[in-house]
Length: 334
Image 1 (cartoon, rainbow, N blue to C red):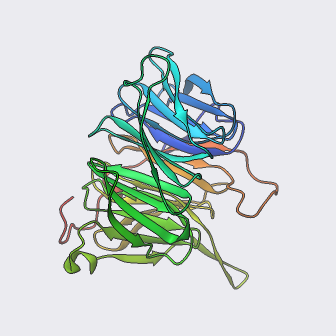
Image 2: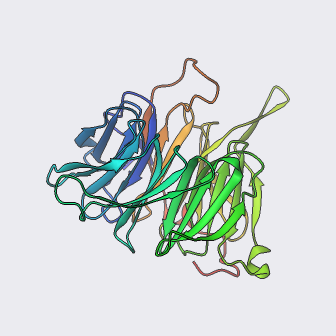
């Protein structure tokens, strides 16, 4: 197989999310501003199923089996079972559904909206037609990104707020932090080992942080510059739109509006590899569950307004085990 190939039949508009199935390395789901959520078999390189929202879809994730969740500008939280075709709206936010993650530990969905709330949802609780909203939790600002690992929820919002919750007790905030990054947070992703998270900003930086509030653990946090280019003697700084932790080695990839994808060893604060630039902004990244394939959405993110740009494409890059390994694992277990 080639080191990299292009996915056939990508969406017709900006790509918001690419996400691999948690246990099927050949299954990729893609959401888009063309209102669709599509399923692909990357081995056969074909689209196998698709469903639609009434407006642009801003995020999607897998639940149990072949169940998919999605949300976007139509404010609806939707569950679609690709194996049966069952499709239900679990409920609605009062503004766009910006971000979501499925908690396997609790078997429910967590959503974040521009209406300044977090929602939790269980499709099993309300019967075949409705599902159920388990709770709505008000936040101080718009939600931009969230992620879950085990019982922890990390929420990044406007105003540089980062709140950490225990999913078993959403009525109380476990930790309230100010982002280590000076500018608006674009994305947050939990480490695979559950020890912390990485966040990225619109100003070409990534921060690595740890949940443990002890001074020793907090002393380990750091931030670094990335996705910057010098053009005609001027440093151009680009948003970092995507982060994805390798499922086995715990290293991570970042994708930016410069079209760049870089592999990082967060344990040793090293850049492992920089890949050739993609045609336009990298809007989303996802690792297959076996860690052998990185899906890259090359899709203009309109940071510079309306302009001519490369078509929306998805690339599947084969990554060798050697490329993804940390240099040495120092002072942290994977």
